[in-house]
Image (cartoon, rainbow, N blue to C red):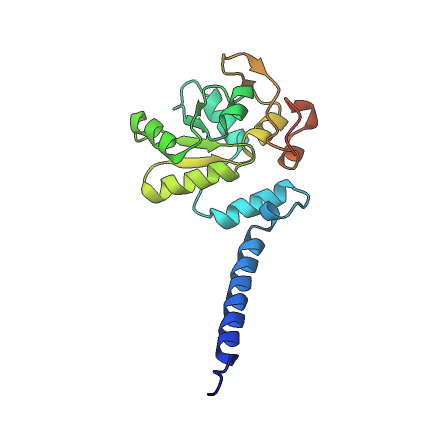
Length: 193
């Protein structure tokens, strides 16, 4: 009795490994700064957000401050998409908390259709992901991500409040790596490693 050749199986295994490695490398290349523990810069964060969420309009902190400071203009719906522990430290005045897409949709269900929506998180990644989901479901709605999100806002000395409305200059740094983008003097606690 002749033994069957193992060559076709080896070729199939090698091909599968090559495809898996290619897919993994593509994913890691695309998300390299979120996967590897390299230093984080604003340029890297903005590049990653633009690369991964190209359909999400980015609203600058200066533009948002002007919108919020104009008593005659329409007020946008501000949604903080960070974790509850981050929101509990501080958030933008008037911002509502909704870290899951279902929570965001519930808030939008009660908002006027023509009201602009501005999502933010620590640096803009989580909020851009949720904004992309919202825009895909309802492209006619005016949804923006706050460029630089809460860290940029805080670094510029713009107002933050605690849940009871008390003004503060402190912000949750998320973790040690991402907290590098927040001025160290503004850190509310030691970030997790």
